[in-house]
Amino acid sequence: MTTSPKSAPAKRVRRSAAQARALILSSAQTRLADVGPEGLQIKEIAAIAGVTHSTILHHFGSAEGLRTALAEQMVEKLLGDILAVMDQRETMDPGDHTILFRVFEVLSDDGNARLLAWSMLKGTNLEQGQDTLKGLFDQLLVGVVDAVKASAGDMVVKDSVAERQARFIIYLVASTAVGDGIAGGYLAQLVGLDSDDATSGFRDWFAGRLFS
Amino acid sequence: MTTSPKSAPAKRVRRSAAQARALILSSAQTRLADVGPEGLQIKEIAAIAGVTHSTILHHFGSAEGLRTALAEQMVEKLLGDILAVMDQRETMDPGDHTILFRVFEVLSDDGNARLLAWSMLKGTNLEQGQDTLKGLFDQLLVGVVDAVKASAGDMVVKDSVAERQARFIIYLVASTAVGDGIAGGYLAQLVGLDSDDATSGFRDWFAGRLFS
DNA sequence: CTAGTTATCGACAAAACTGTTAATAAGACT
DNA sequence: AGTCTTATTAACAGTTTTGTCGATAACTAG
Image: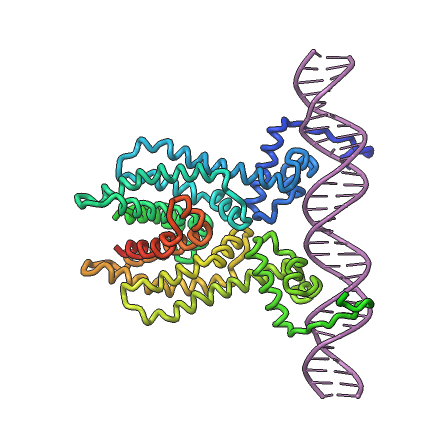
């Protein structure tokens, strides 16, 4: 035997509350990515974090509390990522759709797409970040309207037409990004695109088509 | 009391095994639509079906067996719907994208999108129907290649170029349909599209843009 | 009508998941 | 040092979910 017969009390690691929460949330996210929402049980998560399930209950109150905290954390990250992209908006010329595709990337990122799907399935409210997101899309709209009008060249385009078209474009990019993030790998395989074509190749092509 | 005091043995309904399985699967699907994957517990499903949970175990072996059977049934339905659409393919002219948007409708149908999201999240294998789906997409590819070449008009289009473009188009339609089905309502609200514009309006616009 | 098959049920057992409590130990602060 | 806070744990209890078993009733076949 390598252990002493009287079973020594086993040293404890004592983290700060913030550190413990972060560790547990990280473990939960790992678990979510690995086996999906069904795997979000505190016993398994505790095992990954290297703590007991009691510790999780101490920090989050309940199992559902942990899941809510996880969802909140991921929503915040999503919003933060999009915000970071939007902060660079001043640097873009009219007609430059770089921003749109940065948003595409953020949304189609695997973790974010899965979060969205998870939230939709469990009917969870993303309402906390809804106003923020709404504002961001409104902001985006201004730029895209400009791009639409610019792409029309000399032709006179009524503002209302350009705006409607801009909304369609944003909606198209957003829904495509979500679908791409959730089912992209699977669909690419079915359609017969290799991984290069399914990402950069497709996005370049998509970008070229958008403001035709 | 309307019931006799000695609690008469209560008549049993005896279905065929096939009927019983169908009834239970239907109840499970209802439950899935109502409260999401978390609600797929045999006790609740049994209550909806009007049987005991033992009956479910008898027909499906285990709770997970029921869930697998449900996923299989829904995948089969999805494949069947797409197949039905494909059967009408002969009737379309080159350059007619009707078929593409029938597929769009099938995929973006709420139930199918939720199924897809559910499957993706739980890492469930759609491999059973994968070969069939692959064949369907291959079939679809031929039609879209024709459409691309037709839409190119007089311009000379190399087959390899047209095929790559066709793959992109299919990928775009599929991923858009998935994203639209899963998050469409939410996204439309954020972008500021009313429900009419978010469905028929958007799809018409999308169709017009596709083969430009 | 009889025998056989099996879908169905009820009651119980087992397992999984969540939550509670009291004790302990790691660190902070005086 | 000593004291206080609290993160951590072990052991236990409650609840939910799943699974088992024997009996029964509904239908079929002969």
